[in-house]
Image (cartoon, rainbow, N blue to C red; front, top):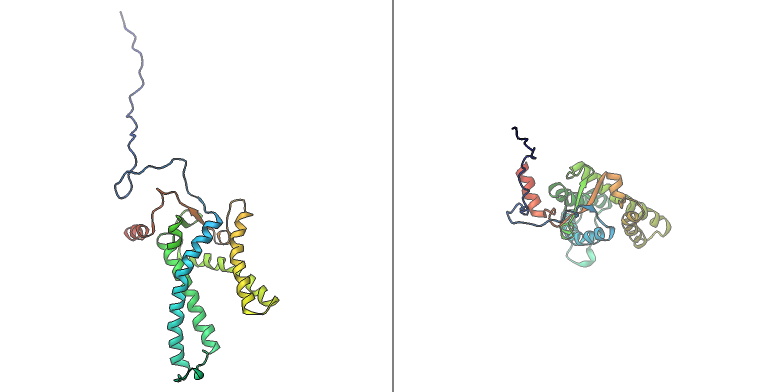
Length: 224
């Protein structure tokens, strides 16, 4: 008598329920529903204020050094306050202004190139990448900075034409900076002006996926 053998499904290895480990070897728990999302405008503005204190310190340092150099090279120094003079206009426009712009580009470019985030962005778990999800190149960083300066420059010019005073011009430029992020509220994807013009985006990273600034520097150096 022949016995019919029932077909049994092949055994599969049981799925491991062990938690994933981080790069440091410690187990971490990750919410499967948590994923990077487009950063909210208020969070981005707060991160800029954090970075602004460091940027102002750098600009002050650069300005002080260039002022001393310009004074020694272009003017006769006196011994009394009544003998104080202003630096030549050509020196301010052709040396100091480009130096300030290069300082700003270097600050953001270095951080974006290495880890995608500045010190202020790290505090709020923000990360700037291009539309493909990769860290920005120098060219993309420069393009994004120019895009971020477009509206403040435009608002500043308009304010200067309307009021003519330096205070009105600076206030208008600040409103142009705020406009970059107010624009997020009217864009259906929540993108800022510089996001759209530079084909890049700033994301709010989950706690587990957030790499951290110094680890980002270290990991990128290893890849190179």
